[in-house]
Length: 218
Image (cartoon, rainbow, N blue to C red; front, side, top):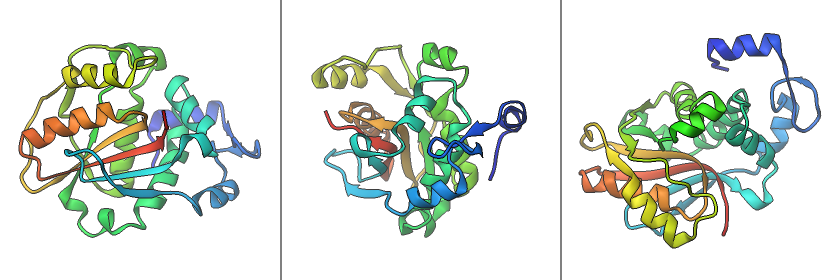
């Protein structure tokens, strides 16, 4: 498994314990991983006019990996990314969308607020994309930037949509005939994904997909 040097050092200094059986080693040990990856992964046609396909691992309400994702998202548990990446890549490597023409795909991380990066000590979405890029052999571009640090938690669906449409901009070039894959951790209302997809499509992206770990119903 590909790991950044800093995370190998953290493994040595403070080994993880499996979330399910408490065995030392990884956030999910190999035995528990086998039980998880058998029934995961969903592909749907999006309801958004700007997103062509959506790929996600599980429904948050029913998922076995909620705590793994939440600790990665809200706590400085950066090592969780490697077990999450195993789960995601196992799913994606079994779909032709990601294996037939990987050179035509480009991952785009949803930008994280500076405040949250400071709180965690790392950009959790960018790290997710960097590890996925290595394991899937797909390029990534950090071409979507934030205009501000608006707060989604507690906002209504209408407020989220209005905020999202004002909060992102393109900082880079769209490559012709590529499929752009917006990557995020959790989809709730879909406002962030749709706002970013609109920017990409408005700037002549041929196809836009969304990839996220959990879907959370409102």
